[in-house]
Image (tube, rainbow, N blue to C red):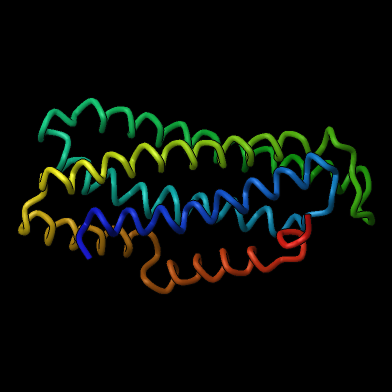
Length: 197
């Protein structure tokens, strides 16, 4: 697998996260029960797998290698801006999640039903992140296809990028932590609230 396909494979996993975030948002908007622990898991996956690991590979290795080729500097600049947008949404999600937990303890600690005003900010940022993932990965996949089509990355550069990806993985917690992220995604996909309409 080459360095570009490696990133596209990440996008397949990230789109699974998008589906989870969107479904969770829909449930919260409908005032249906989603365990707070599951929402926290979504937030951790966004922070660790999507941003720290995947965007780390793009920002520290792939984009620096491709930005000065074939006039791609502007594309790369836009992707970096979008990454920052994603980070800000994730930060706001975390902030609202912490606020939601606090309000839930204050208002109705023993029930699964809560006032929509408590749930809405978390639902909004989950939805925003799902939209971000959908649009951002779609644009990046087109960019990656162009890179492959034009054979922009040499074999030697590809080998170096893959080595950089290993460094990024180690900085994000190593192979074991990335496997935990996949297990958490699978766990969320099997949750009752994910399966029910």
